[in-house]
Every structure is written in structure tokens, then in C-alpha cells.
Length: 77
Image (cartoon, rainbow, N blue to C red; front, side, top):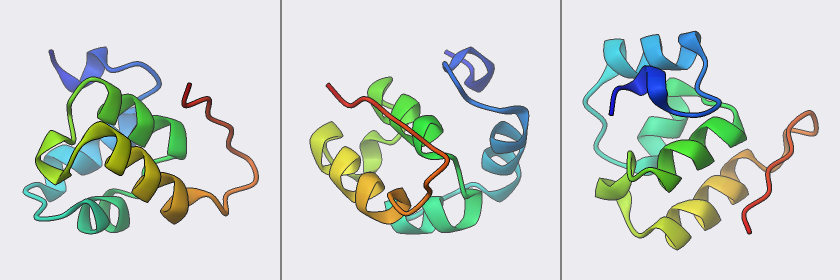
């Protein structure tokens, strides 16, 4: 699956992932790419962040890191 097929992933985020890779941790990925919360969740759901932990742990870490963004909403259920 290509990045352009990931639900809710913007062109900006795709370009940043391609330009800034590789990433050695989830925190580094989130800091350097700066995805919207929904983008990070979509990547986790399809296994795009599997090298950084289990899907539940990625959801938890991503939610804590990006939760302060009031303009974003995500349903994790």
C-alpha cells in the first residue's frame, strides 16, 4: 500500500515522511513529521508505524502527544 492510499493522510504529511525518513522512534516521527492526530491514527491502523510498538501503545502515545490540539477529533474505537 502506498502512502497516497492511507485514509486521511495529507499531501504535506506524505511529503514530510518521504523527505525526512528514516525515523528511529515514534516520538521522533511525531516531532519531525508533525502529523494531525487522525493521520497518525490512520497510519497506526494500517501498520505503518508497527516498528514503534503495538497498535494500542502507539494509539496511547500518539493521543498523549497530540491531544492538546483542540481542532482535531479522532475515534479510536
